[in-house]
Length: 140
View 1 (cartoon, helix red, strand yellow):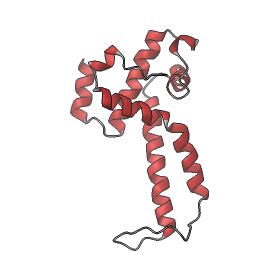
View 2 (cartoon, one colour):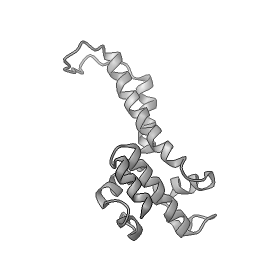
View 3 (tube, one colour):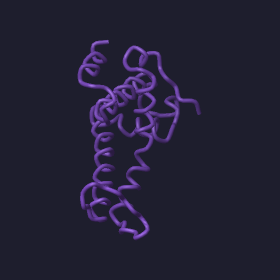
View 4 (cartoon, one colour):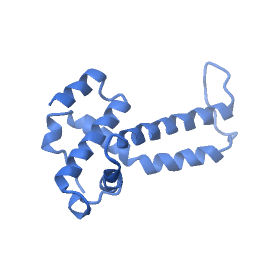
């Protein structure tokens, strides 16, 4: 299925940022799986990490898990900006790629607006757009 870049988004954010944010959201299940795996991961002797400081292997795993959890939190924080009744619909639409027309409970236009809001929030939370650009997207 081709990624759709809506006309309304062209006025808000560049296409590359839109698609990066969209793919960040789609990575949510993988990130959650990775975080749970890192919780139970042990240091493997064949892994060699070069650092300027002495860092234990356990600290390396903890830092990787912390980074993953931060990414998950940024995505979840973006979903909190839309009303609760739309969150599940948006997750189905974005992550599972269920077409908007197939989702019951809201019009496709409403889901499209909420989807764009979540994508812009992910771009803001991950630092793809700065605060000035974010305020400009709200004015348009």
